[in-house]
Image (cartoon, rainbow, N blue to C red; front, side, top):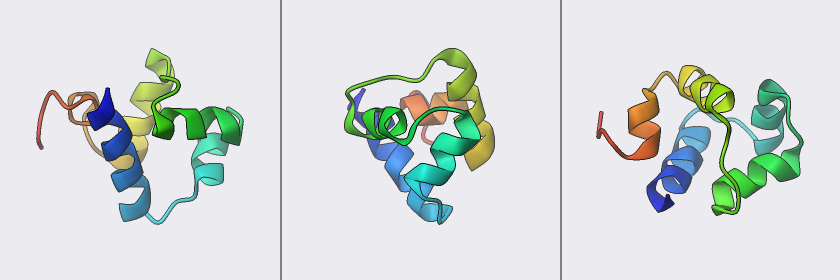
Length: 68
């Protein structure tokens, strides 16, 4: 899921958020969130939806199924 990692980092930077801020929003530890960006872990469905909502993009976009 390399595209997910890339889009996650891109959206975090575009929204001027830190890894710590996103982890807190998701209710997970910062190391857990860092694993998402590295590709060493994947969010559960609930956190995937929260990420899409936070960045105002679709889940399909984050997963690389859509370019919009």
